[in-house]
Each structure stands twice: as C-alpha cells, then as structure tokens.
Length: 314
Ligand SMILES: Nc1ncnc2c1ncn2[C@@H]1O[C@H](COP(=O)(O)OP(=O)(O)OP(=O)(O)O)[C@@H](O)[C@H]1O
Ligand SMILES: [Mg+2]
Image 1: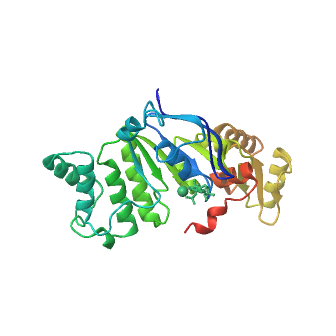
Image 2: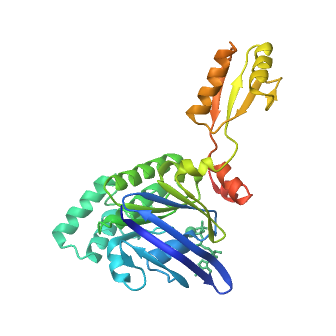
C-alpha cells in the first residue's frame, strides 16, 4: 500500500518556542489517521505544514506523493483542508458558499451547480441552502465547511478538530460523514482532543505531547500498552468469593462488595482461563465484566498526566 502522507524529522519553532521536535509519521492511502493531543500540542502546526500553509524548519514531508515545499502546487491540488475555524462566509447562503468554491476550482457554470447540488444533498443542507450561513447552527456550519472542502474532490483531506464544540448528536453525524468519505477511498488526517473520537474513527493514532509523538499505533495497540485491564467477578455468596480467591489468588478482593478483580488483557484467552477455573472448582458467580483500558488510561500512562482537555469537553 502506498502512503498518502509521509514525514521524517519535522521540526518547527516560533521564536525560541519549539513546537514540533522531530515528527515521523506515515499514513497509508485510504485510511484515517488521527493526531491526538491537548490544547497547544502542535496539531494545527502539523496540519499547516502538511497542507503547505507553513514551512517546517527542518525535516521532509510528502503528501499525495509530492514534496510539500518543492511541489507545493501539486500538493494543494490534491488536498482539501477544513481548518479549526470554519472558512464559511456568514453573509453568503450555503449554496453561494459552495458555488464560490466551485468557481475557485474552475468548474464551469453548469458543473459548478451540479456539484453544489450534490454536496447540499450529501450533507443534508438542502433545506437551508438559500439561507445565510450566519443563521446556521454550529453543526450545520461544520457540515457546510466540510462540503466546501470537498468541492474540488480532494484525495487527501485534513480535518482540524472537526467536532470541537459540537453536541453529541452533531458529533456522531460528523463521524458518519468522515466514515463515508473514507469508504470512497480518500485519506483523512484528523486532529482531535477527544480520545473517544480517535478511538471510534482512526485506523492509526499518534499521541502528540509537547512536540513529540509519545505513542503511535492502532487504537487496540495503544490500549494494550497500558496496564489496568481486568476481569471483575461479582459473587452472591461469600463462600463462593472465598473459593474463587483461593483459585485465582488474593488479587483485588473486596469482601463488602463481594467482588474479585483479576488482571487481564481483556482478550478471549484470559477470559477463557477464568471461566475454566470457575467451572473446574464449581464456583458460582452472579456477574462478570471485562474492563479493557480506554484511551484515557493510555494518555495518563504515556504522559503521566490525566488529559488536561477534559474540562473543555461537554
Ligand atoms: N504563528 C505562530 N506564532 C507563534 N506561536 C505559534 C504560532 N502558531 C502556533 N504557535 C504556538 O505553537 C503551539 C502549538 O500550537 P498549535 O496551534 O499547533 O496547537 P494545537 O495542538 O492545534 O492546539 P489546539 O488544540 O488549541 O488547537 C502553541 O503554544 C501556540 O501558541
Ligand atoms: Mg489547533
């Protein structure tokens, strides 16, 4: 598989403030790659470098096969960028915003109208098409913004925090939009502060913290880096708890709650071992639950801090 995005050793400073300290990433074509990090981590800076809006101090980056510095025009022709702050013009209607983009992409009058109509339908904006964008809700504005990015049919799309500030329902709708785009074969580079979002959407995730990537992998790989997975057994009878503790060891036993927690990677094999043990000793449990570590645990384990952006999340 070819890579839609490839970088080596990207550094970027503003004055004496170093923002990126050697970023190496590779994004396979047709996948979603998520750059995850708190406020000020350097996400937008990275998007700006990859989309030719800023130049790195050192290192190389290729997007859609072209060098972002030496072949910036070819990169720009291949990509779409939806910035962190919407590029929508509030004085124009949704349809007018889209037609403006079609003009910028040198669509003829007829093709421009056709593409505009197509996108209004795809993004569920037909009813609002003739209203000024200033009257749109946050979610509608975001959808229009992404629709504008798609006018030129880009093969690689950068989405910088596409769901920040959206309510849960609009966020889910946006996730579906993103999934549909990838199903059409485009590559998506998505920044987010939301661990759950990266977990839901991304094929691979890079965790950015103070200018370096502190972890990279599939969501499952990242979760496996982190201890904390366990199987929790709930007992109805105290003697059953005692028997289980004898069988599995005295780890995390709570006599008041009548639970026993057994370390586990959350995988099927460790679950089977527990069930076999219960069977063999004829121990009765009332309930069993599996806790696999989530990306919150990952961030804490990798950076030694709980994710700071939590207070911003609604
Ligand atoms: N043009 C600039 N001049 C000076 N400093 C900048 C500039 N652009 C970004 N920075 C600084 O670089 C750091 C990283 O900023 P960046 O916008 O890349 O973070 P981010 O991860 O996108 O954060 P957020 O989640 O808040 O959008 C910040 O400390 C910011 O103040
Ligand atoms: Mg940003």
